[in-house]
Length: 175
Image (cartoon, rainbow, N blue to C red):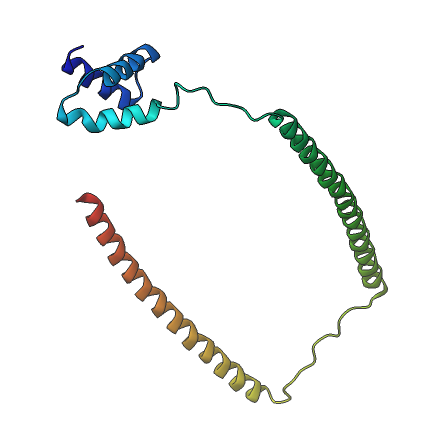
């Protein structure tokens, strides 16, 4: 077999596109033929992959029985595991039913009390002088306005920063 043919088969082998007969041809070539220096590494790799393929592997006596026993033990463990989970599922179901009943009772109690007129107390006036109430209201609204303006300023700053970041990202993507 020519070296060019071997190189082509090796390339196909490394890509995983060879058939068994092609691999057998490569194996025979590397076993029987003196190969050029640049193919020595390929020869070592190829022969190390297939050196155990020629030998029959001895199966220890009783291995099949041991494996069957282990499989049976694991099947029993699995059965025990899943049977115990059934009781957990039953408790979850019972708990959800109990929670639903409690919610229904709570809603019924609330509806009954609203029907009797048991309502929260109505708010009472806290200021006797309307001028004082107006001043407190004005101070409160001024504080809310100040805090709201500060929040809006921070949002605007953040928007400016976000625009800069978006522009930089667009520049990076366009490169």
